Length: 453
Image (cartoon, rainbow, N blue to C red):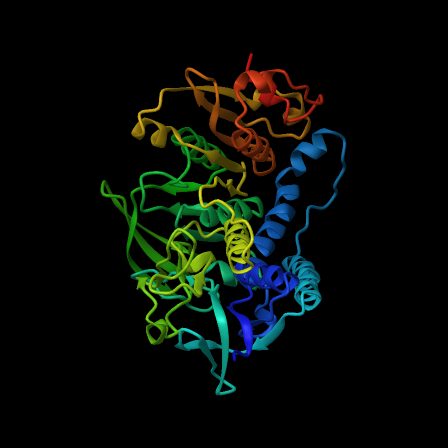
């Protein structure tokens, strides 16, 4: 006899979602999380939610000059980081109350402790030195900051994205190591607040997974805002002093040494599995990532699942939610959700970028004949009204059938606009289908219609 039907390890987006669904489906569920303060995982406490709140605030400051040109008189343009931090903490607590309420409504038992495997049906609660058992176990323990091979985090001087939300002041200068989504978002944030920002990216382009046109445009727009960018760059030396951090950057063509008040390391994340003792349950892993089959079951087991950042799938909260639904459906013996799915990739830098479906590179590799159409926001009235007409929408479609295959957007509200193409691809709509639709005017969305003509 087991203590529970299901044990879920981790209460981030993947964990609390699967626990809530299983509890609502009639299963007895125990979710194990380190403490109440970490409920919601990285996304809520030190990732998606606080970062986007910081970015939303800085975007208003960025547009101050435009608002003034429209007649808004602001005698003082002040920013108080302490006030923003307090507002962000209130936001986090409000959302956390919602998550805990959701778990309570689904009658989920919560254990605040660290968990590790004893065997494939047993989990040890470390601080309580107590074992609990279940028929099924779901690993959803999330991920953590990836350390730089050369530099170590150091107080408020060399920081990760986590420490950004605790800074006592905005730095005069900052080096951001990593030009992925997180790095570019924080580059936009600090730039908007007046910091001298430099990005050092090891890859040959920013946001490496995005369309080449988008990456080039993003680099150009960031540089227009006086953000310095080094691609194919590597940090080879550093020294911390009272003046800040002296860093040597090697681009292959040259070496340059510069002193920054702060350095932000943003080079990816690693799965939180090293403390789970997965070997006790004979769970297969690769460099910390849990290996699973097409149904998200751990190899060697039909009762242990893994979802979220512990997998090699994209470390995105919305992907984790979907994986949680797939596992819940499986455990509840309901119709399973497809493992063949598309998801939007979104980055909240300035300008925003987003993509969905097949990329040009993937289509060429698969030898699919396609065409693309691009519409620049400079022709869109709403973009001009919002004070930023940079960027474009680019759609890829089948050459013969005109079926929508993929889309990339850079510019105003790209992270919202991308979902109309998510629907178009899932509904197997063609460009001709889109042409027959009526979009409101003036809106950013009507650019979808304009690019067809």
